[in-house]
Image (cartoon, rainbow, N blue to C red; front, side, top):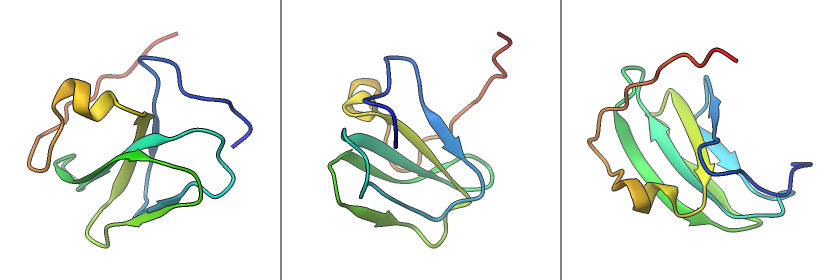
Amino acid sequence: MKHSGLAPGEGLWIVPCEGVHTFLMRFPIDVVFLSKQRKVLKVRANMGRRRLAMSLRAHSVLELPAGRANETGTQKGDQLELHKYEA
């Protein structure tokens, strides 16, 4: 909430999580709801300020820079593969 945006390639994976809000955020985000197996259950693209999104079936949520889900063609039913990043 204190940030001014997400840089390309950045994201925030929230585990466990079924819902998010953007009440105090200063920028829009794409929200991807994931199952425990990291299958995409729902995509909320370009979620602006003061919004709420939920998926009661979700195990986690991936927050991405606005427009990223569209750029990558991410949609319901996709299977995400995550790799550990070593800094």
